[in-house]
Image 1 (cartoon, rainbow, N blue to C red):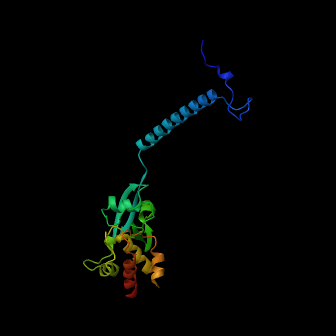
Image 2 (image 1 turned 180 degrees about the vertical axis):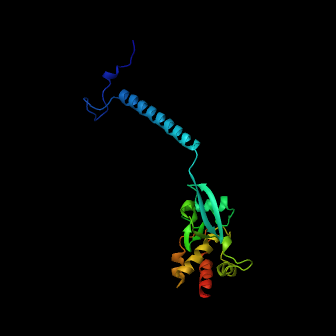
Image 3 (image 1 turned 90 degrees about the vertical axis):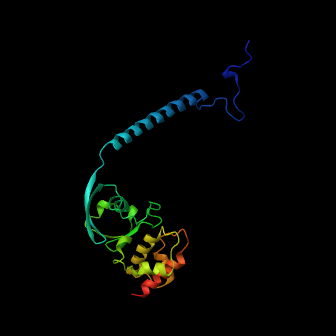
Length: 212
């Protein structure tokens, strides 16, 4: 004879009502299994949909813009960022891909004279725009004054953020935000230097602004 009690004979936990109206353990397990199966099935459905979408041809457009004084016409995927257009399509790798989320400033370029994070800017929206990258600042062998100031002030270490810092500094000067070191720091705050060269970067911007 079995010593196990039937489930109905097992008393409820302390503090629980004997007439509990909630679902039984068996009902809960069965419901959980059904929901889990639905989630798995749903996941498989969405994966399949994603694969089908990926198998299709992504929409593309032709965009014409002037980069560093040269007119360029390129056909790109509509999702292509300006940064990827510059680096992958035009071979201008001076603009760096850092966070790829607009938080570090390493990709900063000038579009129609204004500072932008090129990683967040869609290339297809720049039809007819004028883009300046670090490669377009110097005039032949003559460096841009801010490029020279970065050398004079030793305003870099690893150099990864330097192109974005210089382009941002050029924009900062053109915008007239150079009345004090504090103002320069404020308007250059979107550009991160992980080597901590901020003091020298500010001096370089000050030096260049003072020549104007």
